[in-house]
Image 1 (cartoon, helix red, strand yellow):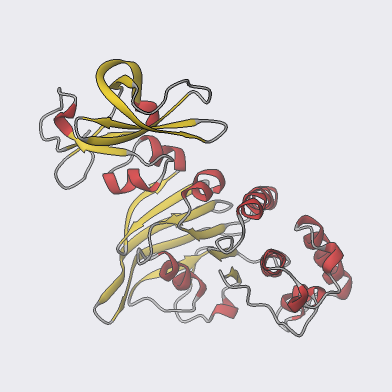
Image 2: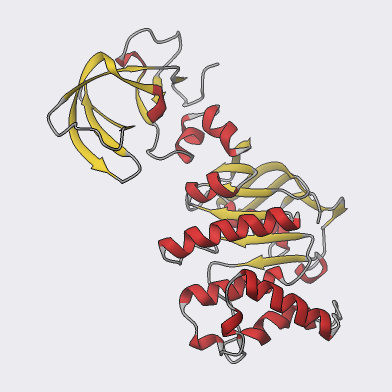
Length: 331
């Protein structure tokens, strides 16, 4: 596997700036998730690394080697797209074998059989190896698509929202599988998603992108506990961070425009009165939707709470975040 370095990466499409001076190091053996809404620059970054697009400025290195001028086939990367991109006329086995039969790799047949069997077992598709791709369910097709990348030993795996089209249970199962495969193999993996749960549960590092700029990069827990801005704070955490006027509880520091409160930063049972608007029971936890001084707040409480709509709850902040007028966090 290999370290990937992006240095001053810039890309424009007409008047649209897709990437704006992005600099980031993806450590060897890491699972890096790029997080942000549509248009943030996630997929463009992936395409720069893969060689499907070329940057207007800056450079990409993989394993210390400058990728300038190298085609995707010369970069030794494996890419998984949101769409399945299988060969419909081939069987599952033939789809999995296809990358290994490349003239560049020249993989011996015994090694092909071993790798295909191993990956099929991990992805639980061994019983489908002789089925045509067109006979598979959507979840099975995506497993085969992921398997086509896994059978290779590339320098980097690149995955563009590979789980987004799957149902919730299969998504959860494959999150665990992918993380386990990456950890066991020591693979370097760059992964694009909108899903913050995927980011929190799978990533060793998260890159938060906004309108082509890298806002923050680091371990997911670090970004959750020490966000540099409202935008970065809002990318991770369920329920989403509550952002209110800085003086709503009083005692705001100089220069503060907003206060940010994650669920665990709201102490219940003391402080000022709020009214329960709705109780949302999710099994392992219960979310409280509160009305506080004309503001809406969402927090969590005991799964078996007796609270109901209309009840009064006292709340106060505990070690909240404060942000200035631009949204930047105050130290």
